Length: 93
Image (cartoon, rainbow, N blue to C red; front, side, top):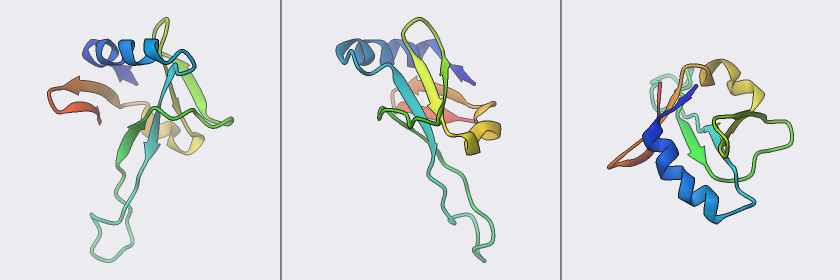
């Protein structure tokens, strides 16, 4: 997993403003949108500033930012990049 410098720069003042908040969570908002027969699930990885769950995996990205995800996402999360541009904060794989 990688968090781009642009994403870290965007998140830094938000995280600094909320002292209790130091983690961005990656979660899977899966759906069946890519399946005509409903037999395959399409994965959408999304981001949240909610507190991680107790059994989430938490990885420090730098001195003030952590990223968290649940165990089921472990393989999917390895290759993602959290990025930021004019459209906002997003995940690319």
